[in-house]
Structures are given as structure tokens and as C-alpha cells.
Image (cartoon, rainbow, N blue to C red; front, side):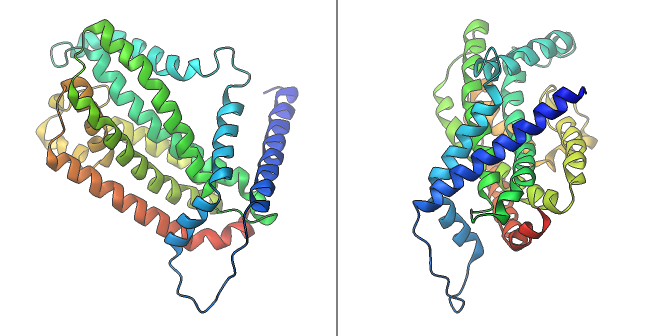
Length: 302
């Protein structure tokens, strides 16, 4: 990479940090300080959630900043959020439709539905690690809820997912896919995936603060997990002896929860919803518990 590009990236990161500090200072000024009582029983997870609510203006500012920085020099801007998965779907459809046309009808809708939800999970958790690592220097300067960097990353990618539903609807219209009443279930599927992704993001982001190599290792893990998730292939082609590994993958349940109302036009079975809900709750509780246990050490690692 040329030196001028490296300097540009460094300057962009510095400007982003300065903007974050300014937003944090403005938010803190608007919030009345809490009196700390060492004798009061503490439930760290609940306290962190309350702090996030008190700093909701800063959270919204971080989301706006990340969206603006990401697209401000793009000619297409937010339109790229809708075109990117569409182009990926077109390429994969051309490559794989000849292989799967007997097993999967309307492969474009099947593929794009799974691809959108997977991109939300993978991009959100990856961005959460980067946000916390690069924003960690702020923790030495001013108090902000440490989980705010992680939560903002998931919200940014939630916005991207909602925008990407537009090309999905267009593909459904073009291919003649039926819009069924089961689509009303999509907010529940997205909400459960949001909670699951947030729990995973809290866990891996906390680890990345202590071991930056976790970011690279996580990318490898995501690649393996993507192959174990029926996104570009139907689970029906997987031999019975190997389906056990797919059922161990929680993302399989979330993808099916999201895709069934879109592709099959039916509500997911109650058992599928229960397994996804259980995975989401366990992920959120364990991730937030682990994050709050390590949060006090972040300032010394930044």
C-alpha cells in the first residue's frame, strides 16, 4: 500500500477518534453523574444496560458516524448497501444454479435471503471487535459505557440489513415469489438474530482487546461456520451422517427462521423458534456476563 494511502487511513482513524471524543463529551455533559455506593449490591449486566439507555444519544451518534464514514466517499453511497448483496447473489446464482436447480427452485431468492442474514451476523460481530479495539483509547480519557462500541456496531449492520431487504423484495417480484402473510414474522427473526449477534460480539470484542490476533482467528472461524450454514446449498443435499454438524451450528436456525417466511411462505415451526430463542438468550447472557467481567481491565489494555 502506498505511503500516501497509509497516511490517509491513519488520519481518518484519528479524525474518527476525535469525533467520538467530542460526541462523548457532549453526551456526558448532558447526563447527571451517578453516586457510586460500594455497599449496594451490583448486577453488572443490568447496570450496563441502564448505562446504555442513559447514553442513548451517544449510541445514536456513533451509529450515524459509522454509517456516514463508511459511505461518505462512495459514489453510490447507501445504494451500495443494497447493490452489494445483489451482485453477490447474481454471481453465485450463475455459478451454482446449474448444480442446484433440481433441489432448489427460485435459487436467487433462496440464496439472497440466507446471504443477507449471514452478512448481518458476520459484519456486525467483526465490526464490533474493530470498534472496541480502536475506540479503547477513549476509555482512558472519559467515562462511557464500554459496551456502547459493540452495540453501535450491531445497530449499524442492522440498518444495512433493513436497507438490503429492498433488493430482496425486488428479486421476489421479478422471480414471481409470493408475498405471504408469514412475512410478518420477519421482525421476530431479525430481533432474535440481533440478540444472538450481540452476545457473540460482546464476547469476541472483549477477547480482541486482550489479544488482537483474535480478529484474524475469528475471520477463519467465520469462514468455517459459513460452510456449515446452508446458505448457498440446501440441507437436503447433505448426507445424513454429516447433518449432525449443521444442527450444532446455531446460525443454521437463525437463517432458517429468516428464510422460511420469505422463500417457503410459511411460519417456522415452534421447535425451530424455540431453539433459536434459546441460542439467542444464552448468547446474550453469556456474552454480556463475560464482557462486564473483563470491562474494568479494558482501560489498561488500550
